[in-house]
Image 1 (cartoon, chains in turn purple, blue):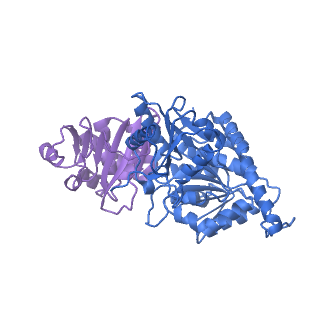
Image 2 (cartoon, helix red, strand yellow; image 1 turned 30 degrees about the vertical axis):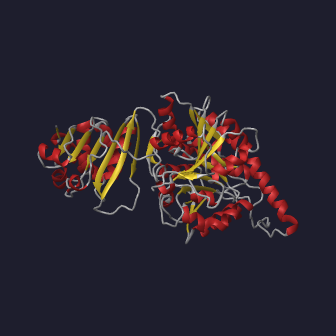
Image 3 (tube, rainbow over the protein chains, first blue to last red; image 1 turned 180 degrees about the vertical axis):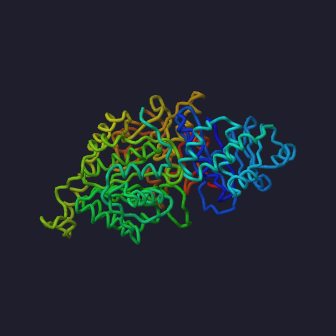
Length: 182
Length: 389
């Protein structure tokens, strides 16, 4: 089972991202769960969402404390939230940032595992006209983990966003091209 | 293979209700139940569900509207949580006393104060004695299936049924579910036909005054009906198993065959308890889980059979019964044991109040605590688990 913890700010679509991951995984025949952190969420405040993917049915009703993957939608979060808390050493941190790798590692308390980085805010502003990075960061997620297929995620985005899907898919595909893995 | 849909459990529950072709939905929004009735309102508004959606000013009115509608022979649905259930309280007894087959999705949430929107079972335990049939779901598939069963059972027993779904940790999770094929469901759940109903062409009175000369008899009849519902529930589950292969039992077990100690629990946290069993079984520890699916009528015989020859039962309650001799499930278990010769020790913990996570690691610790009782009797009748000192 792969456990994914998403970090965002209220309004950036972390919960939607988690749901799209689960929807895509289930449509390709896997088992998955997605859920928000349950609380009085406010726009702009740090929020978390969670997803699990497995080849077998998933039996679990608890938050994710030791994720295999963290997906961070907002570039300012690593400074104020300990985003790598519990992240497995063999895990991967997928970040929205324009900083070079050594600076990112410092921000991540010298996390030694795999890091995937893309400037998702820039892509989202250029493609969507808004700094909402959830679908863009799914591109980085695809590139870094290969857990869900491009086809499955495209279908999930189309079902969810209707006429806005095209722009979001374009942003996602750009992120696949522009994500760097260290 | 039946197609799996990725659905938030609330939405899946709403779609199952719509599949049951309800005539009347009446509800008042309250977290964490809201998504269910929001989705039903949308289905009615879009013309996808041919039902009356009655928006009301309170949960008291929501249940009252269901009572009125059900008395005319309509298939009804409502859903609520916590404070909403408490505001509905008076009418819960009227629904059961008038023998109306209403179905409610009760999305379990803590009762205030302190104000809490998170999950535990303090709301449902307040209606323990209201004469409703109660099912508990552990996952999204069960939540969907139990809605189908609820209508089948309610309409055969003429008793209201509550399907308990843990708030957030179950209701708000997106997970794969399958829906029963509509043709199969229509056969499983034929249109509702009630013999005694409010009909201007054939006027009758229902819910009349119960003078001392007949109240006792009316209550006896109601109590017998609730007891007799047990067989109807079993039959509904057997019929469903024939259609889907999915088996439901009043009490379900996990690794109980040779278990020395076991956790007794209701609702979705059973999943974490089963994960703890896997961890401990890998180390050779003989542990198991007894999961109560049917809370009312309490399936005493099934329960006594399920516990096998355990030396200690750890009952994990999700609600406090203030001033009582245990948590609500703990009290029930002790009472059931006294009807048999089995005398395992009972450790009664109250855990997971207001949505505090009870992880598989917590359940491992709870099992370890339970093993300690093999040599040392519990010193208190019950204990609130995980209190920060």
